[in-house]
Image 1 (cartoon, rainbow over the protein chains, first blue to last red):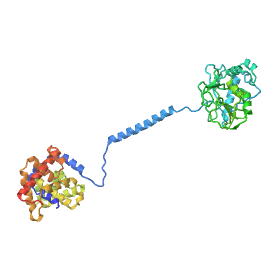
Image 2 (image 1 turned 90 degrees about the horizontal axis):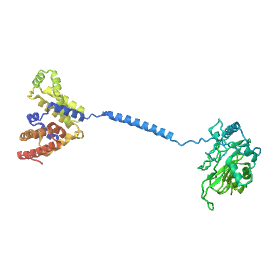
Image 3 (image 1 turned 180 degrees about the vertical axis):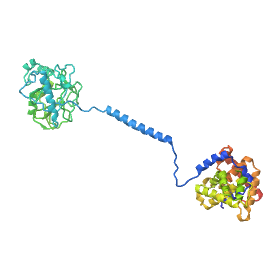
Image 4 (image 1 turned 90 degrees about the vertical axis):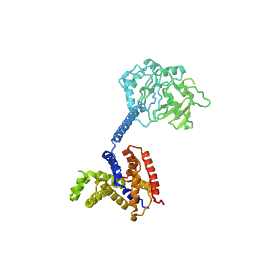
Length: 310
Length: 184
């Protein structure tokens, strides 16, 4: 049945009943506003302005940008330090002409140090690795007006140079120890004496991926200690060696018979020949690597030169 | 301007009569049509049609209560418009009130004048009811108000208004049965 018929019936009720149910104007105005809101308008989108959402959005964007900026600044400030070591001499080699213990003046040593640093900085493709030992007690009496590193350059006493020849003595351990303790030097290709850095106590040698061009020069009083490496039939006690070079070392390493390397381990130190050949030494297992590709057994003499008593 | 003056303007065929009528009762006409129709265009068309019909009918008609006469006219036009539109375009709230009425008002034959008699019976019934419940009934089924609007007008809860309507419908059904009307 058509339901509109019911409405027609209701519409025909008495007028006084309709008039009785009229609502006052104040009620009607509020109802009209509601009714007007209920009136649907097709084809038009209703826009509801919300100011608080706009302010909240602006505040959120501001907080996001501030947070990103602060985070980036903190990360930049706490970034790991870049590798910025001073250049190490790349082609340190021995020459038989000069003694490592010759007397040098302050200016000469400073000049040679500067010259050496510029030379090493130019050579970029050579693999150089020198173990560094730092002695904090005995600082160099030779100070230069060059880089702070050279302030710790050792003074080579004339008296010692007179008694010690270029060739490392094949004498006993005592002479070796006293010599290494006082004046560890490296003979550069041009014959000048270049003090080399000593290794700090807790320094662990790692093979550098890039050539090291800076030499930090100090006077060692304590030997370098390599960390104990687990190996069969080898004691776990740390190996103590002195970080320096002499012509005899290079003669020995050149004369060894090398084969493709088979062992896997970490070298304790390395020395660089005049022709750029890098020899890496492991005192615990007593092997020598040449240019990281060939290995040879370390002779006792070579071991003695570095570590003293076998 | 009072209603009698407006009626006088209609008799004199003064066009300002419609303007005066609109100024006084436009919101009420909009409200009544809005309770039945949902689209703004339909509502405006309905109200304008009602104004034209009043202009056409006065004279010869001379209503004693111009307001009620106008409300009747607007509602007729709104119902005609609603009938013209499809069933899907009805307002949901309106459909609900129609379903409620169908439970208590019996079917009748339009051509036999039964609707007039039925309307009189309903009027007699409503006069026997409580004033508030009567007003709630008329607001709901004649003006087409929602339960929320009714509760706001009379300061009662929606649940209370719904209860009033339910009881009134139940009583109306019993009264009409007693009057001899059959429910299929």
